[in-house]
Length: 356
Image 1 (tube, one colour):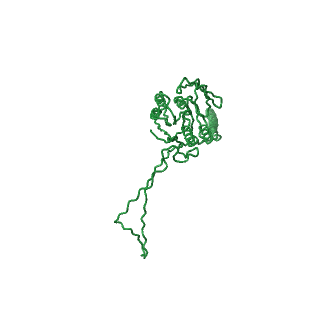
Image 2 (cartoon, rainbow, N blue to C red):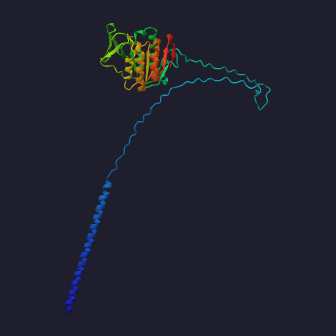
């Protein structure tokens, strides 16, 4: 009985040892596998960051656009007052530390009142500066005493046959002077009118009996005009001319001065088509210089009202100049008033009077 019990006990112990050995090996294998698995997981997490290159950020500074502020120069005459007479109670004494036997007199200085009558003048042709250079000294341009610092200026000028003589010479001289002062790199345009209206530089060919006109450009553009009777009854036939802006450079301004001096006068006088032509420009003008030597007939007042209302709605200022023709004064004054512009009358001899 004891032998059997001893055998059973040895067998159980051996089985138990085998079971423990198997469990230990299994535990070791599982531990190794867990460590390997954790290592793989960490490798998957860390390895990409070691091979990833950071993107280079490139930035550019855009060009800063600085708007030049156009400042209108103002000249204020400085008048030096005459010094008041010294008080009689004040003694004129020169102090000295060391006495001297020589007396030094104190002279009386007479300071006269300076004259304030210098160089402005009302007559045509006088002004501040000689007008040389396209920039005009940075102070903008003028036309018969009306100054403008605008960046877009349209000249609407009467080239009708009635201008012939002193008026024509005066107009061409002042227009040429004004063009010399147009600020460099600004925009401007010349629009001439009589019966037809045309952009400066185009050629006007009048029909027989002044029944019409063809306005022809250098590139073959032709604009047709028809006269239905009198000098104030002209209309376009077909497409209308739309002026393009000219850029104020020395060569372009020289070319425009030549055009102003060489363009021939033609028959008829009507305001509205030329002013409408200026209002159609894109971008629109900021200032229009409008000069004529005559009225546009009985419709002048209504034309001034229509054009004035349209220009005001667009924020366009129209400066008007009546050249030796009193019949045009009322309508031109109304046109200037409605747009916030100036009205100037040029009398015989070139004397300029600013009315508004």
